[in-house]
Structure formats: C-alpha cells, structure tokens
Length: 515
Image 1: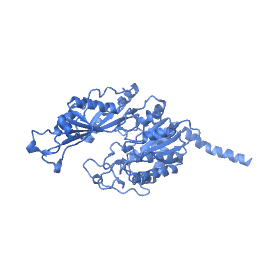
Image 2: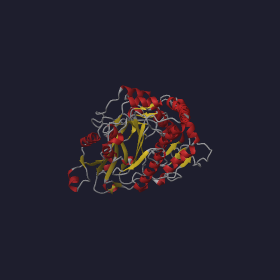
Image 3: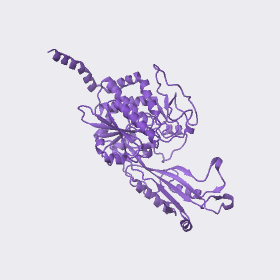
Image 4: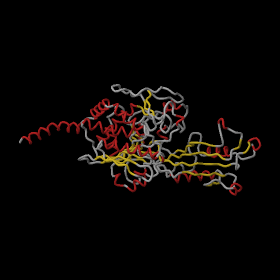
C-alpha cells in the first residue's frame, strides 16, 4: 500500500512537468531557453572557443581527426550515440538520439572543416586563437580593438563578435544545436522527434567522399528531413529558412600567345597578346548588365512554383543597404533584386592571371593568360551540359580547344588556342515548400521570434544537397543562424554573439515543435 501511495504521489509530482512540456507556448519556450542561456553564457562560449582553437584546414588530416573526436565527445556528453566514421578521405561524425514515442525522425547536417588560412591577412590575431571584439571590423580598418572575454558574472553583449576561422562557417551551428538540446533538457521540454546528426569533415574540399558514404550507408539517412546548418541568415537578420542551394562547376580558360614571354618593345604590335584575346573572349560571354550570352545558358532552368514566387516577393528588400555595405553604386541585373537573380544560373570570373603585376610588373607580352571561372547552377542545370555550352560558345569565337598545354605542332596549326579544364561540379537542389515537413518547419518558427521568418527558395551559395535530395530521396531545409557579414572564407571570419544566441533559440523551436 505504501509503495502504491508513493508511486501515485511520484506520478502526480511529475505530471505538471509532462503537461508543461507538451503544451508550452512558443513564447514560453523562447523565454525559458533564453533564461537557460543567460545563466550558462560563459560555459556555452567556452565550449565554442575550445572548439575553434583546434585548426581545421580541410587538408590537415591530423587536426581534422582531433575535431571529429571532440565533436564525438561533445555529443556523447548530451546522451547522443555518436561515432567517428571513415569515408575514404576525411572522417565524419554520425550520431543518433532516440526519443520514446516519437513518430518522426529528423536529421541535422553541418561541416567542421574550414577554408585555408593566410596568416598574414589576419589582423592582430592567429586564425585559431579566438578573440573577442566589441563590434564589426569594417573593410580597410583594424578596429575595434580586441577586448578580454568577460569574467564570470559579466554578460556578453549582442553586438560583440568572436573572430576565428570557422567561427561562423560552420562550427558555431554545431555547438548552438547541442546547446539547444542542453536547454530543453534543463527546462524539462522533450524533443519532438528522433534526431540524427551528420557532421562532415571535408565540405570545404567539395565533399569528394560524401556521395559514396551515403550510398554505402543508406540506413543512416532514414529520416523525414535533413536540416542544413550552414550559411548566413538573410541580410536583414530575420530568422531564415532556405529550401535549396545552387550547384557549381568551375573551369579554367587559358589562352596562348608566343611560347615564352617576349619583350613588349621589340615585339609589341606584332606578337599576339593572350591577355587581349582572353579579354575579348570573356566579354563575349556576358553583356554589361550581367546577362550571359552563351546560347542555351538559361534554357534548362526549372521555373519556381507559385508558392516559391510568392515567398520571393515577400522577402524584404535589402539591396540598397548591401550596396552601401560593399561600396558600389550600381548593381547588375537590369533592376532585378539580388534574391531574384540568385534563382538564375550565373557565370563569374573569380580570378585572372597573366605574367606579373604591381611591383613585379615587366614590359613583356605574356605567353599565356588564364581566367578562373565559376558557373553557379540552379535547379534544372546539369554541370556537364553547362560546360559544354560554354565550350560551344568558345569555338564560335574562333578558338581551337585543347585539354593540355599545346605542343609545337598545335601552335603552328591554329592561331587561336584555348585550354579548358575544370572539375565535375555538382547540380543544384530545391525542396518544395509545399511538403508537409516544409510547412511544419515554417509553422515551428512562425510567431516564435519577434521578426517574421524569411523564406528563401534558393540560397546563393553552393552545397551538395543533391546527394540527399536526388539519391537519398531526403528533403533538405537550411536553417542558417550566423550573421551575413561574417567574412566567410576570408581573413577575420567572425560570429556576432546576438546571432549565436538567437540560433540556439531557433534550434530549440525546431527540436520541440517538429513532431
């Protein structure tokens, strides 16, 4: 009898917690998660700083493995069953957390490798020694000066920023997600779904082994949605969901002149100059407003749905602020907005090289000139097809295409020679906003934050989401949490603290309300 009474009392004591967990409002959830964060700010930031302190260049295998082992231990600390798994290249970290009674399984993806570092370009710091500044460093400036990390009992300010490689791309989303789970556990709010995690170690190397890993381990990806925790929020800093990402293919175009650099005084006006040849070839590919003149370049674009068109129309305009931020007067695109133009394929010159410039400049006619090109793809474009269209255009301009440096016979048979090489690239991906899981995710964040949710049909950046959407039949939705002005892939990469705090709250909402 006594045991029965004790059991009944125990159930009664636990019942209010259970009811609260199931019926908590979005406002209450956000307030409770925020209060947890306020009470644990220092340990939350310390975990991130410790993580950022491990170098993570994508080709640095020993340190990539150190990162993987640390992630595994951080996950196990939260009760997640985690393992470091081999891919044939850099390892990845996989984890699972089963929730009793859950009817749905969701999955999160992020990467923990980073872009290469040029130490000479990082101002007043080493890339893997995180520092704190009380604001954003503007282009060409060295301030604001670093400040000490707050002592116990002192609060972090929203506009402060942590500077370190991968502070935003992509280590902070990993720790923010794990912190959101800590907060939910602390306040007694259960997760809504079973959760799986995949944290990749070679995304910045174009994910060469992710496809084969997915093909060899299809059961690991048995989920209803894959949330991509990568990339920046919309420019207005409103909570953001992105339903697709562009694909990409890169090519190098090299045009040839004489077989060695020759004196521009002795041979000027006579020896063919590959710099000018390349310039004419490149300007034949686009008009002054950015429209690509390559035949068929836009023909295979999959049109946006009515819902996607409406989402695009609802995105708050921010183009004028971006012009001011990046210091130019007039944009390309015939007056169309940045977000409209992201839904078109683009052809970009990402680098030019011919002989020497600056203090090393010499009075020569170069022997060759090279342009590095990236072609951003949207849904419907195939990488090989887009490259072939560019090659056809080049041939129409009177060039003979080779895949290796031309030999003497080739040079003596063709006046205009161009070498075109490149990678295989990958296609774009876009998840329908009309899927039940898409609508449920929108609902999870609607009315949760103070600002409206921005719904973006396609992200400007490229992520190989097609591996999941095309081959695994796994819809993807991006949940970016970092500031857009984070210097991603550049020196002085940074994370705004206020965005990090909001990101923790965002993940808490998805973990709770997607059920």
